[in-house]
Length: 595
View 1 (cartoon, rainbow, N blue to C red):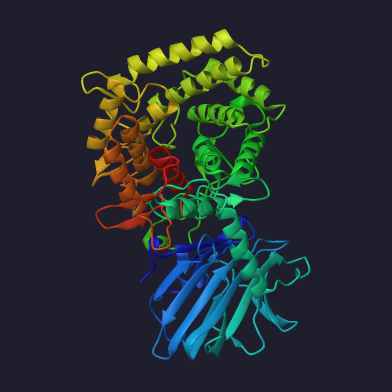
View 2 (tube, rainbow, N blue to C red):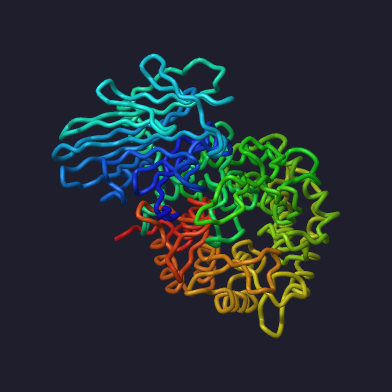
């Protein structure tokens, strides 16, 4: 049986990440970056597409228990067997030059024989490397990739069926370590890391980082786990944060809604920045702001909805026909064609993010305001255009209400910046006029008076969960009857077992795709925020409690959730969901002390 999405835990080194299953198998790893080709792709295929399992010999099913070391990204997986008990500790240490996967096996009780099966398959499971011995280690080479496997002399290792097998026995207090290291095949082998020292330092570093979290309210453990996950999804060299470390995990098992999320979305920028700043992570917030400024630099007409880890603009979408897909969900895609869409909301996100950063006291960049002025100049000329909206619909452009609300946000933040910082120059009166005009139009064309709710697009009867952000954006106060009506309508029409869908997929969908999808966790957090802001705090806290409870056994959240089956859906773990958890905790509890 193929592991479920919720069966996975995350390890990473802030440049890439791996998913480790409950059976002790590393089933997904892209090297050397999040968006590189995978060398373990069992997640989207089968064992022949690459994996690395370490478990007691003969153990077929999941482990007995597993957990992260407190406030860290170091994973302990334990098995109880008839012979005794054993622990496998997995981590990716902060890299110097090359990425390493460190796996340390410790005996806990009795004497347990442990088996390792390493099946490397480069280029998303399609290329079998040539494996040879060198300097007492195993090295696999194919094209641009070289991977070294280092174990200890006492470990018996052999090749079989295009895989590398190892077997050994451990008793109490004994340990065996493996290190897997990648480097470009035309480079010499990088320096070897000490696996046990790497383990000690990794735990200390993560715990010191987590201790900086300023939040001390209810569910602090979940908030810290979410922040650690966001840190793990950060590409350290640039400060960019990927939406998820995976591609093509399905929004509907067996369906076609399978997308590559290993890129950085502008739609997440304000909420990400808010979470980092409010939780006390100024340095990470600054790095994200700096990534944002570099990515959006250039002609405002060319502003994209997403970029690569370093701000790359071309993310061509391809289908990998040799992969069977997770739970048979095809096609498996890499790249993302939505990069070419027009989404007017990103102008609001960028303006809001830079306004938030400036207001929070992040050291201003000399060119930041000139970039913002150029964005506003373009927006003033083009805001009336239809667009694809923040959900990247593939069913044609419309006059999406959320997009127009974010145009209002852009103008509002521009006006607010000039009012707060009079040394800056800009078109104050023009932007005030733009703000007022957009507000009038949205309230006239984007509001259904009969049902007392804002709609997905002008003249539409459909709803959209993004409308829950209206009070948070400041477009209207939370106690405005139109906001209250919108909250009630979305809860009634897009609610599903108490959670929230992004929009309807019952045949009138705007996304141009067949099939269905689950409830969207970020939107469900938005509902909790809106309920609280409109005075329904008890309901908001109950919803938050439920959402926190949807995390898997190690505290990770997916993009979507199916309440009927209790299954996680979509790419995993999802930054947007964890950002939602942090921000909603801050909205609901602030500095409240758990007690």
